[in-house]
Image (cartoon, rainbow, N blue to C red):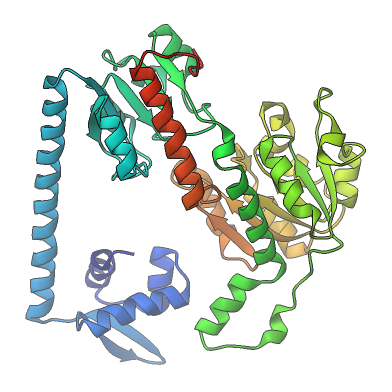
Length: 420
């Protein structure tokens, strides 16, 4: 949370309680107290006793006025410097004679990769900015580039693509490409490439296990209680993974990696797959689970990368899907579900039919769903994280290696890696 945002809230409301800060910013009590203590230690706010509650007020001192003036000056200077830097990069790229490469949004660009690419491209670099950007910002950053690196910046529609007359090649630093209008890229003769799922398979599988143990052992809630001064361990009796039956949806590379990790943990493994071309023995099982087995015998549901053929079943975690559950289960997911019935999930959590939920979601893109999820995320044994399942130093290194390799290959005139 930004200090300025909290100070502005306290000033506009002429003070606020801890509860009001929690409600305004959607944070827990521990986090609210932490941020308020930070401001108290800097003498930017004071405490006023109101009945049985403490009211936190902005201090009426010269120090606070100086703080606001300094922050405003820093922001103005930062915006001016950013504009100057960006314009310089664009002008330089236009005049050097090399292909122009634009990293249009956040990307972990490493120094060695930048050096390798600089031999082939002039780089317009927005890799240090935010991940999700508006269509207007995408066009502004990409319109002068011959080559674009798109790290899921936004839904890249024909309306955007039609306004990129100079672009000849778009590289996606992701495995999936459903957020890009492929037909529009073909129409405007823009080449496309992506990277292999192998760059993050192990990271995603390990994250699924991390989510699992957090749910089974109540680790997040237990740690929160300790921070607030409570250490009654009797409230946090957990469950063991050994002996459980897990159901994995999908048969992609990530599934094979997850099965390998689970096999040594003493669980029974079931895989749901409707594709007749798939062979269950590849995964060390005799048959794929039927829909009846899934809902009647599963203890933990894993939703990983499932492929288009499974969207009909797991693309929507809706009432139809949820009402098929016959026994208490845990949901552990890194899949980007197209729809989630949060109200029904909430009901099943209260009834005990769902014992815990861990979702690795896209809150910035699924803004509407996140508003609904707020009714869910503060319940016990619910973890909602911002798409960090793949995000490890190893996977970033793998992603950079594949991306740099493809960009250099394109500059050298090679085409075998292109999707078209």
